[in-house]
Every structure is written in C-alpha cells, then in structure tokens.
Length: 179
Ligand SMILES: [Fe+2]
Ligand SMILES: [Fe+2]
Image (cartoon, rainbow, N blue to C red):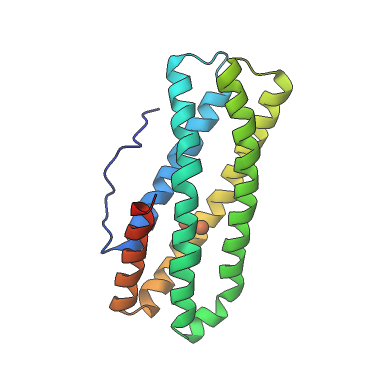
C-alpha cells in the first residue's frame, strides 16, 4: 500500500469542495492502510512506517477536515438561508454527530496502535479490538462520505455564492497555516 501523505492536493483553495473530496480520498486510503497493517503478523519496518503515517494523518489532517466542514462549510450553507439547506438540516446535524463518534473511535485506536508501536507487540485481544475499531471507522466513513459527496457538496455548490466559496477556501488555507 503506497503511502502518499506528501501528495500535492489535486485541487487548490480556490476550489474548496474539490479539496474536501481530495481529503476523502486520503481518509479512505489511510483506512485501508490501517486495515492492512492490523492483519500483519509482525510490525516490520514497512508496517511501522505505514501505521505511523496513518496515525499522524488522522491526528492532524483528519480533525482539520472536520473543522473545514463544521466551521466553514456548514455555517456558510446555513447562512445562505436557502430553503433546500433548511430541509437538509437533519443530514447536516448527522454529519457533525458522525465526526464526534469517529473522533472517539480514533482516540481508542490511537491508544492501542501507539502501544503496539512502542512495544512492538500486540496481544490477540488488543488486535481484535483494533480490527473492530477499524471496521467501525470504515462502516462510519463510507456512508458519511457518500452523503457529503452525493448530497451535501452538490447542494453547497448550488446555494453558495462565489464569494462564500472563496471565503471557505481562505479559511481552509489559514487553518493549515496556523498549525
Ligand atoms: Fe464529514
Ligand atoms: Fe468530509
């Protein structure tokens, strides 16, 4: 599984929705990395590097993506006062709730994986729990990303004025500069 954490984003800050979809592709890729490493009988150098990269991604870039959506995209959509956004408010709340659940799963996964990295061994019990957490994350992210890409982002591109999209892109850029 190639680790392309240093990949240049396909999109730029002038196209914030495309940039968010690039993030989704990285989330999916790193979930597969986690799934693969969790099957590994031993934590060799390659698996160790892959696990480290995936943990770092979900610790730093994952939360930033959620902030892009919760603090930039969703408020801008609500501020548009468009009736279609009001009708989608249940889905918007659901997305934010998913972020909270995902964060809790990532926290526990991080504890188990960091222990594995530091000791080089993992008990069968912990491995079972680790695999379960990864399966839960995949099960959570799959419909979450589908809803965002099939319903929410297309709605955003319909209701947001170009200036609103520019402002979202600028907020995303600043978010990545400030840390
Ligand atoms: Fe999301
Ligand atoms: Fe997302």
